[in-house]
Amino acid sequence: MTDRLPPAPHVVRLTEYTKTDQIEIIGDSPDPFGVADAGLTWLPKEDHFGIRQKGRLVAHAGLLRLPISIGEVCTQVAGVGGVAVAPDLRGRGLARLVVSAAVDHARTMGPQHGLLFCRPPLVPLYQRLGWQTLEQDVHVEQPGGPVIMPLRTMWTPLRHGANWPAGEVRLLSLPM
Image 1 (spheres, rainbow, N blue to C red):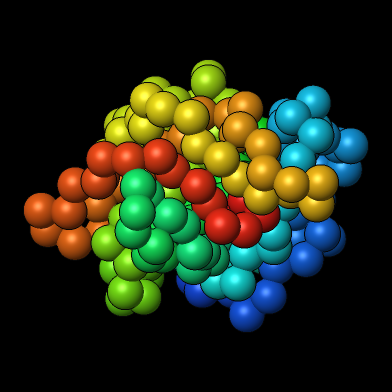
Image 2 (cartoon, rainbow, N blue to C red):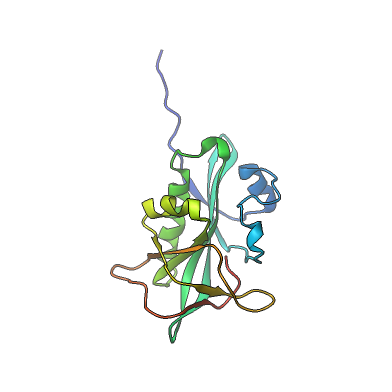
């Protein structure tokens, strides 16, 4: 008898990502990402990457190009968000795979930097994936006006040698 290993997870670009897809991955919680207390309004992502196993969507990362000002410079970042892994499959590298696919695609979009917001307990995960914490306040747009992002802000270079510039940071849109 031959023991067969399950096929390695494979990331695909999703043509769409709906609330039903999110529920398939992480269930129907009223606060699936644990950020409702922040009281923020979020933008939907435009590009989506996922992993399916046995026909079930089990992991996702989304991507969106956004305007940002850093100091006196207005530019763009590739925002990563909506990272989700099925609870029964966490710890198996699926987040690494979907986030890496999103970052690889972001490298083709033009911005110098990737940006994400996360809860403090997730910082070590993203650090292992090469992201760095931004140790300063980041202002983001909200329907009532700009607010300071209450979550941790992290960035990653999308170009060789790209460092985060000095200066006040303001995301010129809702966060992703």
